[in-house]
Structures are given as structure tokens and as C-alpha cells.
Image (cartoon, rainbow, N blue to C red; front, side):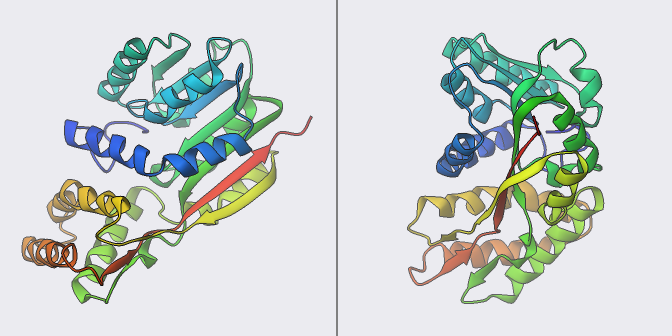
Length: 275
């Protein structure tokens, strides 16, 4: 995450639980991009916006004690959770420091070796200046090091089938609020950010999933709505009546075996720093 004041989805226990569930549901694509980024035993990996450490600590088990994982996290509560998990797992080579990602270069002043990989998932879309963070991450890489990013483009194109007008209203309201401080289409700009940072794109693809009520991935949106929609109502982008109508429709859809949801597409970029 960036900073607890900026993280739109909150930093409470419910959000930490949601992040853990999200990580497990998207574990396959995470491991795949880590492989394409070349993460292996001995790698030094920078996790940009590490949250409570779910991804970083999986990476720590890949790099082993010969490697190093450093998380950058804007919220001290999430950073403490990271440290507790690292201790419980016995991975002292996984560390986290608290600070604003926009000040990444300053946060890394005490690091005497460059990183093999910098990784970020669902963080650039929250940032005020993601181009700056990409540039600073590139500076932290060794020659031949790689940057791996997973984030959104076309987020508001997600839909429920058969279509329900209230679903489309909810998506519109969420997008309006999110884009006040971030950019849900951030991956549309990522190729330019990467090139301007002096990196070369070597892999660019999209993961687009559908969810049915019988699928585990249906839980991903199901746990997201109760966490985020009250914030959309509080911000005045949605009425309480609209939220209540939507939740009733979602409950009904969750019991309909013929319903499916087209999830927001996740774009994945891997770039290399020239030798």
C-alpha cells in the first residue's frame, strides 16, 4: 500500500483478511509472473506496496536464506503484520520498511546492493504518480534486473450476466471515487512509464477471468463489496438505497447457477533493465 491516508480500501482487520483471501485466489498468476521475472533461490526482491506480506513471504520461501525480500509498506499496522508473519515462518531474510512509495529512492538509501527483481501487484492503480515509482524502482534494479507489475486496465468494463442495471451503477460509482486519487486504467500507461524509466518490456499480457457462483473466485468480489461499498456511500458517490439494492441483487445472483461475472481484466508487465 502507499500510505494509510491514501489507501482507498482501508487498513482494518477486515481488509487484511480480504487481502489474504485475494492473494490465495490469485496465487497461480502470481507464481507465474514471478517465474517470468526470474525469481529463484538467492534473488534479491523488492515488493512495492507489500501490505501484510502475503506475496512477499511466499517470495521469501522461493529465494531462501541466500536471498532477500524487502517490502515497502505505507501503513505501520500492515507492516507489523508482515513482521509477525515473517517471524512465524522463520524467514528473517524478509524485511519490511514503512514509507511512501513516492519516496522510494530515499527509503532505499541504506541498501548497498541493487535488486534482481522489483514486484508490485494492485498498487500502481492507487498511486498519485505511478510513473515516478516505476522510475525509482528501475533505479533500484541491477543491470539485467526485472520489474514485474500486475494491475488493472478496463476495470469498469466488468459486468454481471445476465446484466443488472444496479451492477453497472455500482461499477460507475466505484470508478468515479477510485479515479479521484488513483487510476483504474493505470496499465494503459504502463508501457510508456516503463520505456521512460529506461527499461525494456519483454512480456505483456492479460489475465481475464470469469466467475460463477460455484467457483472459489466468486468469493473475490463477494468479500470486496461489503468492505468497499460503504466507503463509496460515505463519499457521496452512491446512496444507501442503491447499495442495499445491489447487495440484494448480489445475494440473488450468488444463488443462481446460470449467472456469471466477467471480472476486471488484470494486465501483467515484465520489463528488463539493460546490461
